[in-house]
Length: 146
Image (cartoon, rainbow, N blue to C red; front, side, top):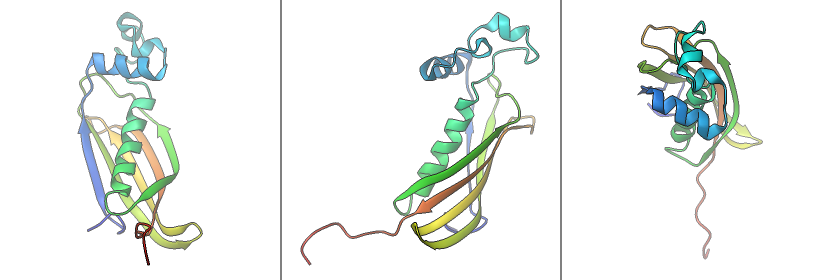
């Protein structure tokens, strides 16, 4: 089964340490103390550090982009994310996308691929739900003599 077939799915597991969560939040400029300050986060309803929402979203976007370009050149067109739960330190998180529709397109030229995605913690609870649309471009021959 290929990326341009309804039902095709792909997944990845990720586990973030405290240091991973702090470093990512620092690198993207997210200064929320829930991602940096252990004492503050421990006193919150989360009972400990949690990842910035941008962290699981980045994994989902990267997975989608990598898969969309595995067979042909492609680009992401639309992404919609809903943050529904915390990504916790040392949790084994499963990220998954499933192709939900595929259609040929004249404008933009190529194949439109729609996907449904999610990230779930080891307890099975959702962290992020997502939808995406990518464009798989037709292969073109490199420029050269005819």
